[in-house]
Length: 493
Image (cartoon, rainbow, N blue to C red; front, side, top):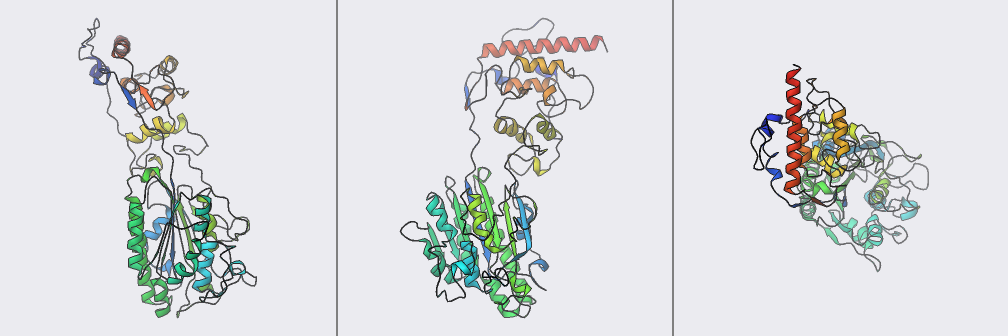
């Protein structure tokens, strides 16, 4: 349960008042918040600017020293969503490269066809790339997803940072034509340069724009050729790649407006490696690759085939377009793995609505991140304020959650009969527990009137606080009621 500071009738009312004392009471105004008249401006609940980061790790696969045998805490944090509060992860270690066996989609497990499929959402039967020579590509009818984003919404800032030169010179270059142009393309000489440039871009990207970033690093593939998926150098290269992934995640976490941004991060590979090194064939270790999606919408689960479509790296393009709510082209072979978990902050019981039951669940919450609705990394009083004022867009004191704090709310809570009833932890939102300590007492009335919403109507961007004279009358009435109530309890004790 979230810790609260309890307020008693005496601590509020036993301080005198500049407007006079009530007979038999030691009354002061209910706190200094009643001593002024002003207008409080509360920002509207911000939208969620949509952002995408696709990380491709060339040659990342499985085997004796592969991904499933190496300690990769940063990649693991994408799988379970723990890289940042409010995110989930969906993943599979059984995605495939190389197309469907014995069909026209089957393609060599080399980088040219692999990266072409990742970027276009189709296989060799459409993009026509059969090897690393790129002799007869068809990116005109099968454009890369970044071009589709640019043509659909030019306001999306697109950027790429790659090491393997043909990704930029043969594939991404085609996105720059008469109809579209990527905002930034970087072909760099090393994985360190790629990750460093990506980190800087992710950290400094304009918070007022949506962004789609593509990153491809190459050293895992180089190690796979040197020592195979059973070699120590392959394991070491995966560990280094994990550190680079972590740097990119850190740069996103460092963004000042991260709480109001909706990121999707996809991680996959173009192919795996044989135990002795190399790739290009259709063996299990050459075809088997990871596919990870982490976002606010992702369903925390192991990824499975959807609509009869098994998971492959052809799913990258449709997954990203779906995240941006852009129609997925019919030519795509892959399926979206964006997830179907609706963004409904505050729906802790997952019943499809945010209501008093969810407020009461938050009152009983320990430090579980599911209750961290303001995504600051901890569960505090601020989450309750965020839930009531930002998500429900109402006032403290609105017992019936009709959007207003009025007389009927006060009648409702006093009729409940739980005001200072000496029965521990038996109150909820509808019975007056507005500060979250599971009791209905003076502290709840104070926080309600302090919010300035009494008889102000529905909450709006500009919240007018009542004039001091009105608040003085309310305070006096409230404290008089409390003192009478306290005297009654003493007589019957």
